[in-house]
Length: 62
Image (tube, rainbow, N blue to C red):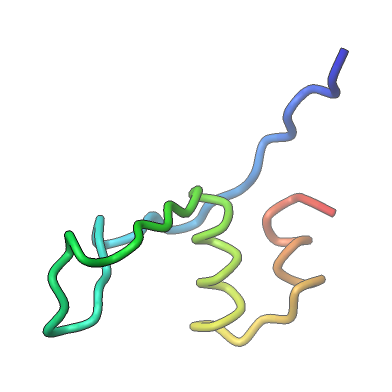
């Protein structure tokens, strides 16, 4: 029996559904799907400059 899934704290949802380079058709690209948890981790680290262990504490995960 797997452990129960821990609730994660997501402060902000993505403002867009798709991101792609300009000049390349969407059908020519490989789609990569991010979960909300992955989006939040990227946002905290890349945009806000928060270290991984601090971001994990803010999200309530190890």
